[in-house]
Length: 164
Image (cartoon, rainbow, N blue to C red):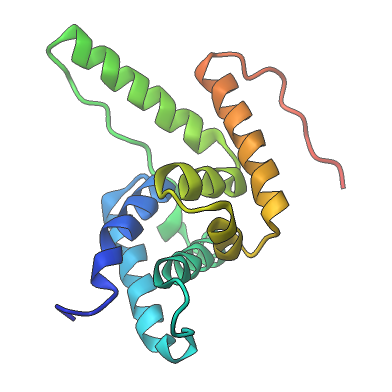
Protein backbone atom coordinates (compact mmCIF):
# COMPACT_ATOMS: atom_id res chain seq x y z
CA UNK A 1 0.00 0.00 0.00
CA UNK A 2 3.08 2.25 -0.28
CA UNK A 3 1.83 4.26 -3.29
CA UNK A 4 -1.86 3.91 -2.58
CA UNK A 5 -3.97 7.09 -2.86
CA UNK A 6 -5.19 6.55 0.73
CA UNK A 7 -1.68 7.24 2.07
CA UNK A 8 -1.82 11.00 1.72
CA UNK A 9 -4.99 11.10 3.86
CA UNK A 10 -3.71 8.97 6.76
CA UNK A 11 -2.25 11.91 8.78
CA UNK A 12 -5.55 13.82 8.59
CA UNK A 13 -7.56 10.71 9.45
CA UNK A 14 -5.29 10.04 12.42
CA UNK A 15 -5.50 13.65 13.63
CA UNK A 16 -9.31 13.52 13.50
CA UNK A 17 -9.41 10.11 15.23
CA UNK A 18 -7.12 11.33 18.04
CA UNK A 19 -9.28 14.40 18.53
CA UNK A 20 -12.41 12.23 18.69
CA UNK A 21 -11.02 9.52 20.96
CA UNK A 22 -8.19 11.28 22.84
CA UNK A 23 -6.16 8.08 22.78
CA UNK A 24 -3.50 7.35 20.17
CA UNK A 25 -3.87 3.59 20.31
CA UNK A 26 -7.65 3.71 19.89
CA UNK A 27 -7.23 6.33 17.17
CA UNK A 28 -4.83 4.10 15.28
CA UNK A 29 -7.38 1.27 15.51
CA UNK A 30 -10.08 3.55 14.13
CA UNK A 31 -7.82 4.68 11.27
CA UNK A 32 -6.97 1.07 10.48
CA UNK A 33 -10.66 0.10 10.51
CA UNK A 34 -11.40 3.07 8.25
CA UNK A 35 -8.69 2.14 5.75
CA UNK A 36 -9.77 -1.49 5.77
CA UNK A 37 -13.40 -0.54 5.16
CA UNK A 38 -12.31 1.89 2.44
CA UNK A 39 -10.31 -0.80 0.67
CA UNK A 40 -13.18 -3.27 0.91
CA UNK A 41 -15.69 -0.70 -0.38
CA UNK A 42 -13.43 0.94 -2.97
CA UNK A 43 -15.76 -0.18 -5.74
CA UNK A 44 -18.38 2.19 -4.27
CA UNK A 45 -16.09 5.22 -4.54
CA UNK A 46 -17.12 7.49 -7.40
CA UNK A 47 -14.11 8.40 -9.51
CA UNK A 48 -13.61 12.15 -9.53
CA UNK A 49 -15.26 12.73 -6.15
CA UNK A 50 -13.39 13.75 -3.00
CA UNK A 51 -11.47 10.73 -1.62
CA UNK A 52 -10.61 12.56 1.61
CA UNK A 53 -14.26 13.38 2.35
CA UNK A 54 -15.24 9.79 1.48
CA UNK A 55 -12.69 8.39 3.96
CA UNK A 56 -13.83 10.85 6.64
CA UNK A 57 -17.41 9.70 6.05
CA UNK A 58 -16.35 6.09 6.58
CA UNK A 59 -14.47 7.03 9.76
CA UNK A 60 -17.34 9.09 11.13
CA UNK A 61 -19.81 6.26 10.47
CA UNK A 62 -17.52 3.70 12.11
CA UNK A 63 -17.10 5.95 15.14
CA UNK A 64 -20.82 6.69 15.50
CA UNK A 65 -21.91 3.09 14.89
CA UNK A 66 -19.34 1.46 17.15
CA UNK A 67 -19.35 3.95 20.01
CA UNK A 68 -22.51 2.70 21.74
CA UNK A 69 -21.67 -0.96 21.07
CA UNK A 70 -18.11 -1.12 22.32
CA UNK A 71 -16.11 0.09 25.28
CA UNK A 72 -13.18 0.16 22.86
CA UNK A 73 -14.27 3.59 21.59
CA UNK A 74 -14.88 5.20 25.00
CA UNK A 75 -13.28 8.60 25.39
CA UNK A 76 -10.01 8.51 27.26
CA UNK A 77 -8.59 11.31 29.36
CA UNK A 78 -5.39 13.08 28.40
CA UNK A 79 -2.54 12.46 30.81
CA UNK A 80 -1.26 15.55 32.50
CA UNK A 81 2.48 16.07 32.41
CA UNK A 82 4.82 17.71 34.88
CA UNK A 83 6.25 20.87 33.36
CA UNK A 84 9.23 23.02 34.23
CA UNK A 85 8.54 26.49 32.86
CA UNK A 86 5.57 28.67 33.78
CA UNK A 87 4.88 29.63 30.15
CA UNK A 88 4.91 26.01 29.12
CA UNK A 89 2.79 25.08 32.14
CA UNK A 90 0.25 27.78 31.27
CA UNK A 91 0.17 26.58 27.68
CA UNK A 92 -0.33 22.99 28.81
CA UNK A 93 -3.14 24.01 31.15
CA UNK A 94 -4.85 25.96 28.38
CA UNK A 95 -4.51 22.99 26.05
CA UNK A 96 -5.86 20.66 28.73
CA UNK A 97 -8.80 23.02 29.37
CA UNK A 98 -9.51 23.24 25.64
CA UNK A 99 -9.45 19.45 25.25
CA UNK A 100 -11.76 19.04 28.24
CA UNK A 101 -14.12 21.65 26.82
CA UNK A 102 -14.00 19.95 23.42
CA UNK A 103 -14.87 16.61 25.04
CA UNK A 104 -17.74 18.26 26.91
CA UNK A 105 -19.41 19.03 23.58
CA UNK A 106 -21.92 16.56 22.22
CA UNK A 107 -20.53 14.05 19.71
CA UNK A 108 -22.40 15.87 16.92
CA UNK A 109 -20.97 19.27 17.82
CA UNK A 110 -17.46 17.92 18.41
CA UNK A 111 -17.42 16.13 15.04
CA UNK A 112 -18.62 19.27 13.26
CA UNK A 113 -16.10 21.59 14.86
CA UNK A 114 -13.23 19.13 14.26
CA UNK A 115 -14.07 18.54 10.61
CA UNK A 116 -14.32 22.26 9.84
CA UNK A 117 -11.87 23.76 12.35
CA UNK A 118 -9.16 21.11 12.50
CA UNK A 119 -9.44 19.36 9.15
CA UNK A 120 -10.42 22.48 7.20
CA UNK A 121 -13.28 20.79 5.33
CA UNK A 122 -15.76 23.12 3.66
CA UNK A 123 -19.33 23.25 4.93
CA UNK A 124 -20.38 21.20 1.91
CA UNK A 125 -17.70 18.54 2.52
CA UNK A 126 -18.56 18.33 6.22
CA UNK A 127 -22.25 18.03 5.32
CA UNK A 128 -21.44 15.04 3.11
CA UNK A 129 -19.30 13.41 5.81
CA UNK A 130 -22.00 13.90 8.44
CA UNK A 131 -24.87 13.18 6.03
CA UNK A 132 -26.60 16.44 6.92
CA UNK A 133 -27.86 19.51 5.06
CA UNK A 134 -25.32 22.36 4.84
CA UNK A 135 -27.56 24.62 6.93
CA UNK A 136 -27.59 22.09 9.76
CA UNK A 137 -23.79 21.89 9.68
CA UNK A 138 -23.56 25.69 9.83
CA UNK A 139 -25.96 25.93 12.79
CA UNK A 140 -24.22 23.05 14.62
CA UNK A 141 -20.88 24.77 14.10
CA UNK A 142 -22.22 28.05 15.47
CA UNK A 143 -23.71 26.31 18.53
CA UNK A 144 -20.51 24.28 19.04
CA UNK A 145 -18.32 27.39 18.90
CA UNK A 146 -20.62 29.23 21.31
CA UNK A 147 -20.62 26.32 23.76
CA UNK A 148 -16.85 25.89 23.47
CA UNK A 149 -16.35 29.58 24.18
CA UNK A 150 -18.62 29.40 27.24
CA UNK A 151 -16.78 26.33 28.54
CA UNK A 152 -13.36 27.90 28.00
CA UNK A 153 -14.42 31.07 29.83
CA UNK A 154 -15.77 29.07 32.76
CA UNK A 155 -19.31 30.23 32.13
CA UNK A 156 -21.06 27.07 30.96
CA UNK A 157 -24.25 28.08 32.74
CA UNK A 158 -27.04 25.67 33.57
CA UNK A 159 -27.34 22.56 31.46
CA UNK A 160 -30.62 22.33 29.59
CA UNK A 161 -32.03 18.96 28.76
CA UNK A 162 -33.65 18.17 25.45
CA UNK A 163 -37.27 17.12 25.85
CA UNK A 164 -38.68 14.76 23.26
